[in-house]
Image (cartoon, rainbow, N blue to C red; front, top):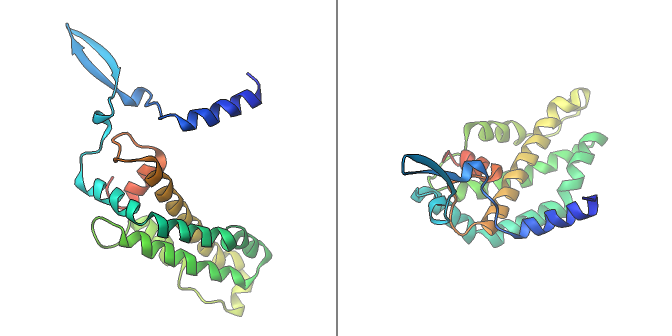
Length: 188
């Protein structure tokens, strides 16, 4: 198979429903034997109401989330890494979108409050900073947390948008990005 054929096939596969692989199999016992069969669509639904509530919240907020992502793409996706490498104090501006993304994601949580402790720590360390001349002496110690927090926020925003588009109902079998979102919302 040539590389072009492989890429074409991959594009076509993305349009089809995902196959569930071995983890998507169910073992039925019939006549004393184990029989593997794929899960049906009804068996691949997360029954927890808080997960359904999260998906519904994300779906309702999709236009706002997409608009926020476009605002970030228009400027920050290329600008933030460049500003870090160029040692420009404009890298501190990434904190605005980081805080905006996290605020919106927190508001969509099925249980009000904070997100996962690791994410909250990354966001806390990477926001609320003001540039000072002394930061230039130890540039990466001051600015890498800003960039890390921004990229984590963007990752979560992208995953929320992606899976809201893909799922009508929350799946029991998890893609990594959906599993990350559930972890961030303390549902996994």
